[in-house]
Amino acid sequence: MMKQWYESLFENYALKYEQEVFTQGTLGECDFIEREINYNKSLRILDLGCGTGRHSIELTKRGYNVTGVDLSESQINRAKENAKILGLKIDFSIRDARALSFENEFDLIIMLCEGGFPLMETDEMNFQILQNATKALKNNGKFIFTTLNGLFPLFHSVKDFLAQNSENGGATYDKHSFDLMTFRDSNITSIEDDSGNIRELECNERYYVPSEITWLLKSLGYKTIDIYGAKLGAFSRDDKLTTEDYEMLVIGSK
View 1 (cartoon, rainbow, N blue to C red):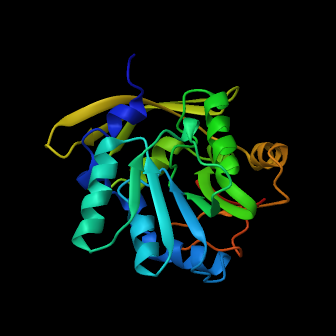
View 2 (cartoon, rainbow, N blue to C red):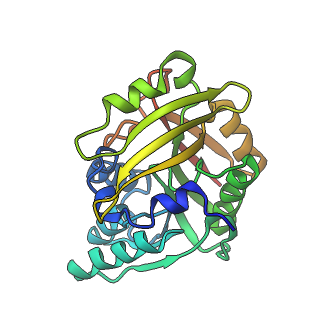
View 3 (tube, rainbow, N blue to C red):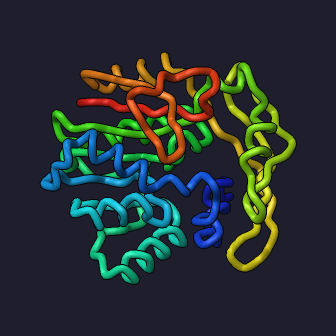
Protein backbone atom coordinates (compact mmCIF):
# COMPACT_ATOMS: atom_id res chain seq x y z
CA MET A 1 0.00 0.00 0.00
CA MET A 2 1.30 3.43 -0.94
CA LYS A 3 2.26 5.58 2.02
CA GLN A 4 0.27 8.72 2.72
CA TRP A 5 2.06 12.06 2.74
CA TYR A 6 1.99 12.36 6.53
CA GLU A 7 3.67 8.96 6.84
CA SER A 8 6.38 9.87 4.34
CA LEU A 9 6.89 13.30 5.88
CA PHE A 10 7.92 11.99 9.28
CA GLU A 11 10.08 9.08 8.17
CA ASN A 12 13.31 11.04 8.64
CA TYR A 13 12.24 14.42 9.94
CA ALA A 14 12.52 14.35 13.72
CA LEU A 15 15.48 16.70 14.28
CA LYS A 16 14.33 19.18 11.65
CA TYR A 17 10.77 19.01 12.96
CA GLU A 18 11.95 20.15 16.39
CA GLN A 19 13.38 23.30 14.79
CA GLU A 20 10.15 24.32 13.02
CA VAL A 21 8.58 27.57 14.24
CA PHE A 22 5.28 25.86 15.08
CA THR A 23 6.97 23.58 17.66
CA GLN A 24 8.39 26.40 19.77
CA GLY A 25 5.40 27.10 22.05
CA THR A 26 5.70 24.09 24.35
CA LEU A 27 6.20 25.83 27.69
CA GLY A 28 3.25 28.19 27.37
CA GLU A 29 1.01 25.43 26.03
CA CYS A 30 1.86 23.22 29.00
CA ASP A 31 1.15 26.14 31.34
CA PHE A 32 -2.36 26.27 29.88
CA ILE A 33 -2.83 22.50 30.19
CA GLU A 34 -1.85 22.64 33.86
CA ARG A 35 -4.38 25.37 34.54
CA GLU A 36 -7.11 23.38 32.78
CA ILE A 37 -6.59 20.39 35.07
CA ASN A 38 -6.03 22.50 38.20
CA TYR A 39 -2.47 21.22 38.57
CA ASN A 40 -3.79 17.80 39.58
CA LYS A 41 -0.79 15.49 39.22
CA SER A 42 -2.81 12.37 39.99
CA LEU A 43 -4.44 12.49 36.56
CA ARG A 44 -3.40 10.23 33.68
CA ILE A 45 -2.66 12.07 30.44
CA LEU A 46 -2.54 10.75 26.87
CA ASP A 47 -0.55 12.77 24.34
CA LEU A 48 -2.11 11.72 21.04
CA GLY A 49 0.13 12.34 18.04
CA CYS A 50 2.96 13.22 20.41
CA GLY A 51 5.63 13.67 17.74
CA THR A 52 9.07 13.90 19.32
CA GLY A 53 7.47 14.13 22.75
CA ARG A 54 7.79 17.82 23.55
CA HIS A 55 4.53 18.15 25.50
CA SER A 56 4.83 14.71 27.10
CA ILE A 57 8.35 15.46 28.28
CA GLU A 58 7.58 18.91 29.62
CA LEU A 59 4.50 17.67 31.51
CA THR A 60 6.47 14.72 32.91
CA LYS A 61 9.17 17.13 34.10
CA ARG A 62 6.40 18.95 35.96
CA GLY A 63 5.33 15.75 37.71
CA TYR A 64 2.50 14.41 35.53
CA ASN A 65 1.88 10.83 34.39
CA VAL A 66 1.92 10.95 30.59
CA THR A 67 1.63 8.34 27.84
CA GLY A 68 2.70 9.40 24.35
CA VAL A 69 1.66 7.74 21.09
CA ASP A 70 2.37 8.54 17.46
CA LEU A 71 2.12 6.85 14.07
CA SER A 72 5.73 7.65 13.15
CA GLU A 73 8.50 5.30 14.26
CA SER A 74 11.10 8.03 13.66
CA GLN A 75 9.23 10.52 15.83
CA ILE A 76 8.73 8.01 18.64
CA ASN A 77 12.38 6.98 18.55
CA ARG A 78 13.38 10.62 18.91
CA ALA A 79 10.89 11.07 21.77
CA LYS A 80 12.47 8.12 23.59
CA GLU A 81 15.95 9.57 23.02
CA ASN A 82 14.85 12.96 24.36
CA ALA A 83 13.33 11.39 27.47
CA LYS A 84 16.42 9.23 28.08
CA ILE A 85 18.74 12.23 27.87
CA LEU A 86 16.69 13.90 30.61
CA GLY A 87 16.44 10.74 32.70
CA LEU A 88 12.66 10.57 32.34
CA LYS A 89 10.60 7.39 32.13
CA ILE A 90 7.73 7.93 29.71
CA ASP A 91 5.62 5.32 27.94
CA PHE A 92 6.13 6.21 24.28
CA SER A 93 4.78 3.81 21.65
CA ILE A 94 3.92 3.60 17.95
CA ARG A 95 0.14 3.58 17.54
CA ASP A 96 -2.37 4.58 14.91
CA ALA A 97 -4.93 7.01 16.32
CA ARG A 98 -7.54 5.47 14.02
CA ALA A 99 -7.17 2.11 15.79
CA LEU A 100 -6.44 2.74 19.45
CA SER A 101 -7.15 0.03 22.00
CA PHE A 102 -7.41 2.33 25.04
CA GLU A 103 -10.76 2.41 26.77
CA ASN A 104 -11.80 4.61 29.70
CA GLU A 105 -8.16 5.00 30.80
CA PHE A 106 -7.22 8.69 30.75
CA ASP A 107 -8.37 11.79 32.60
CA LEU A 108 -7.00 14.13 29.96
CA ILE A 109 -6.16 13.70 26.29
CA ILE A 110 -4.16 16.30 24.41
CA MET A 111 -3.75 16.38 20.63
CA LEU A 112 -1.81 19.49 19.71
CA CYS A 113 -0.23 20.93 16.58
CA GLU A 114 -2.34 18.76 14.26
CA GLY A 115 -1.35 15.56 16.03
CA GLY A 116 -3.05 13.30 13.49
CA PHE A 117 -6.35 15.13 13.21
CA PRO A 118 -7.02 16.72 10.65
CA LEU A 119 -4.30 15.19 8.45
CA MET A 120 -6.20 12.09 7.37
CA GLU A 121 -7.28 11.63 3.77
CA THR A 122 -11.00 11.28 4.52
CA ASP A 123 -13.43 12.91 6.95
CA GLU A 124 -14.35 9.45 8.18
CA MET A 125 -10.76 8.76 9.22
CA ASN A 126 -10.53 12.10 11.00
CA PHE A 127 -13.72 11.24 12.85
CA GLN A 128 -12.26 7.86 13.84
CA ILE A 129 -9.51 9.71 15.67
CA LEU A 130 -12.07 11.73 17.64
CA GLN A 131 -14.03 8.55 18.37
CA ASN A 132 -11.00 6.68 19.67
CA ALA A 133 -9.84 9.60 21.78
CA THR A 134 -13.29 9.77 23.31
CA LYS A 135 -13.29 6.03 23.99
CA ALA A 136 -9.92 6.33 25.72
CA LEU A 137 -11.19 9.13 27.95
CA LYS A 138 -12.73 8.50 31.37
CA ASN A 139 -16.15 9.89 32.23
CA ASN A 140 -15.77 13.52 33.27
CA GLY A 141 -12.45 13.60 31.42
CA LYS A 142 -11.24 16.45 29.24
CA PHE A 143 -10.07 16.49 25.61
CA ILE A 144 -7.90 19.43 24.50
CA PHE A 145 -6.83 19.70 20.89
CA THR A 146 -5.96 22.15 18.14
CA THR A 147 -7.08 21.97 14.54
CA LEU A 148 -7.08 24.10 11.41
CA ASN A 149 -9.62 26.93 11.48
CA GLY A 150 -11.87 26.75 8.41
CA LEU A 151 -12.79 30.42 8.81
CA PHE A 152 -9.22 31.52 8.10
CA PRO A 153 -8.95 30.54 4.40
CA LEU A 154 -12.28 32.20 3.64
CA PHE A 155 -10.68 35.57 4.42
CA HIS A 156 -6.94 35.01 3.93
CA SER A 157 -4.41 33.30 1.70
CA VAL A 158 -3.11 30.12 3.33
CA LYS A 159 -0.13 30.30 0.98
CA ASP A 160 0.83 33.79 2.18
CA PHE A 161 0.37 32.86 5.84
CA LEU A 162 2.61 29.80 5.59
CA ALA A 163 5.22 31.73 3.62
CA GLN A 164 5.33 34.41 6.31
CA ASN A 165 5.76 31.79 9.02
CA SER A 166 8.46 29.74 7.32
CA GLU A 167 11.96 30.30 8.63
CA ASN A 168 15.33 29.50 7.12
CA GLY A 169 15.67 25.74 6.89
CA GLY A 170 11.99 25.17 7.64
CA ALA A 171 9.32 23.63 5.44
CA THR A 172 8.13 25.65 2.46
CA TYR A 173 4.78 25.38 0.67
CA ASP A 174 3.71 25.89 -2.93
CA LYS A 175 0.89 25.25 -5.42
CA HIS A 176 -1.95 25.72 -2.96
CA SER A 177 -5.51 24.87 -3.92
CA PHE A 178 -8.31 25.35 -1.39
CA ASP A 179 -11.53 23.48 -2.20
CA LEU A 180 -14.62 25.28 -0.88
CA MET A 181 -16.73 22.12 -1.23
CA THR A 182 -14.51 19.95 0.95
CA PHE A 183 -12.57 22.58 2.94
CA ARG A 184 -9.34 20.83 2.03
CA ASP A 185 -6.10 22.58 1.18
CA SER A 186 -3.80 20.80 -1.25
CA ASN A 187 -0.19 21.91 -1.58
CA ILE A 188 3.34 20.82 -2.35
CA THR A 189 5.39 20.85 0.85
CA SER A 190 9.18 20.92 0.53
CA ILE A 191 11.35 19.90 3.47
CA GLU A 192 14.98 19.15 4.16
CA ASP A 193 15.05 15.87 6.07
CA ASP A 194 17.49 14.91 8.82
CA SER A 195 19.93 13.56 6.23
CA GLY A 196 19.99 16.84 4.32
CA ASN A 197 17.84 15.59 1.44
CA ILE A 198 15.23 17.94 -0.06
CA ARG A 199 11.89 16.20 -0.40
CA GLU A 200 8.63 17.30 -2.01
CA LEU A 201 5.32 15.91 -0.82
CA GLU A 202 1.79 16.33 -2.12
CA CYS A 203 -0.10 17.23 1.04
CA ASN A 204 -3.79 17.53 1.78
CA GLU A 205 -5.26 18.85 5.03
CA ARG A 206 -8.83 19.34 6.19
CA TYR A 207 -9.93 22.66 7.68
CA TYR A 208 -12.94 22.63 10.03
CA VAL A 209 -15.36 25.37 10.93
CA PRO A 210 -16.36 25.68 14.61
CA SER A 211 -19.92 24.46 14.07
CA GLU A 212 -18.60 21.21 12.55
CA ILE A 213 -16.32 20.53 15.49
CA THR A 214 -19.13 21.31 17.92
CA TRP A 215 -21.49 18.93 16.13
CA LEU A 216 -18.91 16.14 15.91
CA LEU A 217 -18.12 16.34 19.62
CA LYS A 218 -21.79 16.61 20.59
CA SER A 219 -22.44 13.43 18.60
CA LEU A 220 -19.76 11.76 20.73
CA GLY A 221 -21.46 12.78 23.96
CA TYR A 222 -19.39 15.71 25.19
CA LYS A 223 -21.23 17.77 27.78
CA THR A 224 -19.44 21.04 27.10
CA ILE A 225 -17.48 22.17 24.05
CA ASP A 226 -15.51 25.41 24.07
CA ILE A 227 -13.60 26.77 21.07
CA TYR A 228 -11.03 29.58 21.09
CA GLY A 229 -8.28 31.01 18.95
CA ALA A 230 -5.04 29.03 19.27
CA LYS A 231 -2.08 31.34 19.76
CA LEU A 232 1.31 29.64 19.54
CA GLY A 233 2.62 29.09 23.06
CA ALA A 234 -0.12 31.24 24.59
CA PHE A 235 -3.36 29.26 24.71
CA SER A 236 -6.06 31.14 26.60
CA ARG A 237 -9.79 31.05 27.19
CA ASP A 238 -9.68 34.82 26.74
CA ASP A 239 -8.95 34.52 23.00
CA LYS A 240 -12.23 34.53 21.13
CA LEU A 241 -11.92 32.65 17.83
CA THR A 242 -11.80 34.99 14.84
CA THR A 243 -11.10 34.79 11.13
CA GLU A 244 -7.53 35.89 11.95
CA ASP A 245 -6.74 32.62 13.75
CA TYR A 246 -5.04 29.98 11.62
CA GLU A 247 -5.79 27.34 14.27
CA MET A 248 -8.50 26.86 16.81
CA LEU A 249 -8.22 25.51 20.34
CA VAL A 250 -10.93 23.02 21.28
CA ILE A 251 -11.75 21.95 24.84
CA GLY A 252 -14.31 19.21 25.29
CA SER A 253 -15.53 17.87 28.63
CA LYS A 254 -17.02 14.37 28.60
